[in-house]
Length: 519
Image (cartoon, rainbow, N blue to C red; front, top):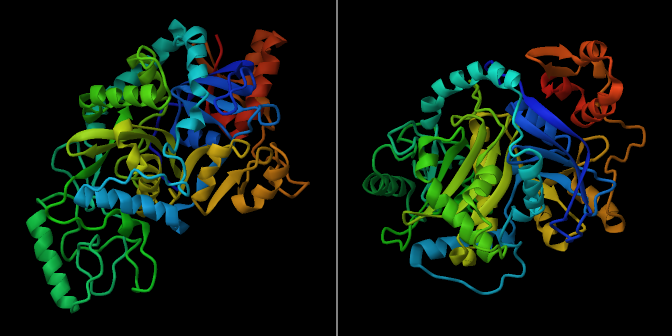
């Protein structure tokens, strides 16, 4: 378990009742229903617990579908990366990328056996309707002066840590060139690969049929010639990372071997993947903001058919850059820390895709993906998901408790959203007891009805449910107090229904840690 440094508590503002908005899946004008709250700030621990109860964020708005009423029930889905093996269609996408990088080959044929290109955008398809509501309802709902003043000192403290966060940029480049740092020399980060007997340091090279010692020496010399000092490869003699190259030649290639296969010296293209902190914005994030936004704008216009004036910078910022997550770190956590990041895909020096992710105590959570439509032929949705699975495996090496990859929502009733179930093994979250159930056990029930309780034990209940609502923490007029004290002071029961609803949705643990803002 991570040893967490002291951080300011989460502060949320719950919206009573339910939101009705246009469904991004079946296009029902008012069929999508959810509960929502505005998160002024969230610790990564609290957000981990919230998504394990079916919540999900869009910018700073955090929502939970009303599963038994919404038109297209959305089940939280997670993949188990440590046991993941790429399918044939996944391998085709990885090989297609390698051929493009090595020789410039472009395959534009239809790949009907592959999942849809954009891996995450439909999972938040209805969020644009939510954003429009937030413009009116919150814009961005300002806190009271008392609340602002009480947090000012915390914000000043955070500002002192920005420079430190800037150094925690993670770069992954093709050929396993992975390092920390925003363009400056920094510590190397090991890639998730396991040593093969007799192998040298360059784990990305395919097995060679020559004598082991000759192979080792050739790889070492070639690596020294191709790789500048400090580019992230394990130095000779250092212990090599876990995961991947196959121990025996008759075993299938690992995900890492497929991704990081060595390119020829005269490769046509160079791909580099950089993970930059988006909130609070790092120097690297700020320097690439405009270029990243332009990719988003082209994506929305060509893929989602938005008019040119719709994908504005402010919408982009609210939806994909602003985050309530606090930037946190722990001694046994990942080197880049926890919080919100953009995973930028740089091809020959320009951004062609960006995966928006949250790094949490137990998982990497995929938020959204956008890419330059000019490169649709590379199946960047599938490719980025596979890179994020590999990235989760890499983080697990330093942070053993971080071992899942959350893919947002699985919507079985929407045919084009079923592709997420192809990243196996994976689990779906039971919407009543909040336990994880292997997807294979859930599919038969989903074939017969949209809404399902996956937990087959009829006696099982939500173990994390709110049992003592009076212990819920309230922030009111510069003071933090249990709800029981707040209720006695107010002597006004008009808020009770909303508070109890909030407590039931977030669960006992979060209700005692998070502060519910009351004006």
